[in-house]
Amino acid sequence: MKEWLYAPKGYYATHNTIGKEGDFYTAVSSSMFFGGAIAKRAICSIEEFLGEDCAIIEIGAHKGYLLADIIQFIFTLKPELLETLKFYIVEPFAENQKAQLEYFKESFGEKIELLHVKSLDELTCKSAFIVANEIFDAFSCEIINKNKMLYVRNHEVFFDTIEDEVAQLAQCYGIQKGEVAVGYEKFSKSMYKAVEKFEFITFDYGDRFARNDFSLRIYEKHNVFPFFSLTSLVDEKHRVEKNLCEMFGNTDITYDVNFAHLIGAFEKSGIKLHEYTTQMKALIDFGLIELLDILKTNTSQKAYNAEMNRVKTLIDPAFMGERFKMCCFRKEKNETHS
Image (cartoon, rainbow, N blue to C red; front, side, top):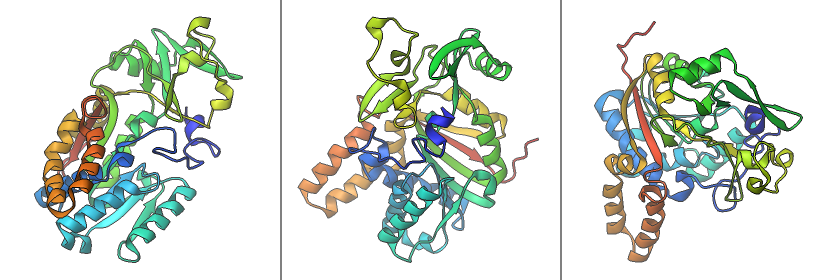
């Protein structure tokens, strides 16, 4: 999966399009009010405990649309903060950094300085509001079935002996069948070291506990293909006539997040879970409805109705509202962790 997504010619490295013209939608591509609600939450957290001289950091920003939306709404809601805040994107790919800088220049001219680091390990920050949308479903994972683990050799897949580290994670989080994410522990430790105090908001799809079933799947032009339907491990009637080799690196591959594992990794690193809820409840609690009321007062009914239709994708239980979850983690400055 790491090679599929992050190799020099992998899916993310080649800067594929997200949204209608791409392979899948995200909350960011659905409505700018996703970023607006997060901006409103950021302002509250800054006033509550982060302070006005903090950084706002996005991880996994693609072209930078979400961070730009957050900045635009901060300008609308509390513009004086733009005088003290710093804005970072954690981005390992030079091509993506270039696209983000170009988009920010088009959006803000010289008024907003966008800073980049390639990883959390390069970041040194006293106080930050950190946001990430759909990054943990793209961490490398191992596929297990009881005491076996999936291997790929010459584009053929098979189950064989499970590695000890993977077996330990599976046992810890009750995973007997499905995906075991690799890298949550390292990521959370890096965040703990990088910032003295922070609030980290992240959205992703999945469940609080292991479903004990395979969720690994491939997205191509908004069509979804279960991974195993492309392999010889299923019988002919469940096979899909697609070439797995040709899809490698040219399509998105993902899986459901096991939030028990994600939360466990952060808590072991000394970072507290502040809140876990659905995307629908989170965005409403952040202030989405109040923002829509402001829009209704300041625009035409036609424009308001159009935006409402886009927002429905974010909060409708039949779409992203219940399927997607929000985790909020906090680290206070005076906390210590061995």
